[in-house]
Length: 168
Image 1: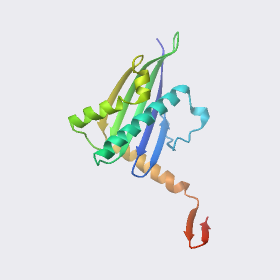
Image 2: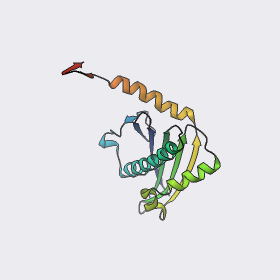
Image 3: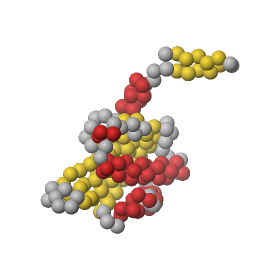
Image 4: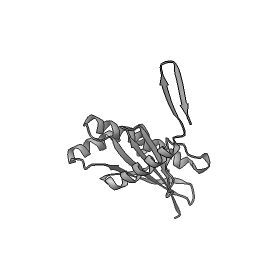
């Protein structure tokens, strides 16, 4: 049986309003899902929809507990490519900047199962969810995005009284 994997990594920092995405094993991290259409497959789009929904639920959970609202969601979809193409399984890894208590982890997992996309595919596809704490993985995204954001700043707008000053 032949299989193919599609992986999407979604990083979100709710405090700084940063969302980023990385496809498969690419080194390129794209801000705000601005990805070239040529790279995207339907499986990437499914992973992005599922991942973005789960990320939003995770951030709500963290914010309600006054915890740092940052996470990395990695979604790996395996597809059976012989015969009729079918999704074989989805492995989700949620990386947080801290370790949750066992009770909080159970509550978060219950919340994540409320995701409408997750609920729609749960019956027909095996989905595994793993929660881990890894500050190094989150730091990788934060450092790359900070340098990318500072490189993308091409002009600054300032407003004073009735004048608009645009510096390039």
